[in-house]
Length: 334
Image: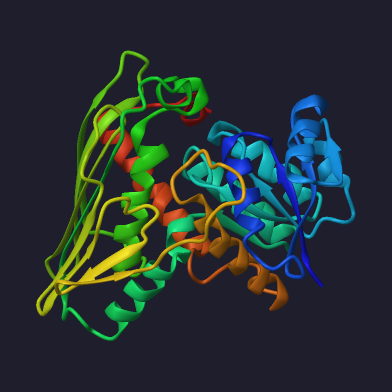
């Protein structure tokens, strides 16, 4: 039986996710319905992607009995209310990153998923790329010895994108792109909580962070550092340095298609899309979609690759980084 997807929101990321699903076998994945805030938007999306059902409200999608799992592609201030809508309707959920605006909201979403006995996963797509799977294998085998330092960066000019600069839209570099650097460090250090975290940054007049630099210290004198910026282009690579060698993830560390292990490069290309994409390498979202299918087939309620504990740890670290940089959202105040 194919996993039947419902797509929640007809925006850019939902477009790319739907295109990515089409790179997987149709007997495994099918998009059964799409919901948007207006019926016109949903119908236009459905037409473009040959989806049979279009809804002008998220409620209707939540009530559709023929949906196995919902992909939530709304902007992050709406993750909480949207995830709760679907989990309370007993729907499995794959929600775009960041899972929510802060730890309090993340806990609410996780509690609701548990209470309703449904599968829930934060869509940290990077972790499911073949190159990321290979990184975890190399680390588990001790290929680079003991890891002592992890460095990562993600900087792209996003000042023209309202979603990146407006506080009420969940703007700020940390939650939007810094999360990729943070999740990478958390992955390398196996979900361990850092002993110490220091963050500094600059904010826009709108009160959201523009550039943030973070250092993290882990047990046994292991370090990590990352920079994220929504105003300048950075090299956007990542390095894992161990006592016996290094792993380098060249540019686009958030959607990696190559790895350099001790100087030797290997390519891991993603499939070609059948429609133009909004974001780089988006067909790589197929890997997280397949993970969801495998988890559902096994009756699991979370994925071991990005577990509920992983999502909670990232939210706690994001909160602490924002606290040190001085970014407060309305969601933090009640």
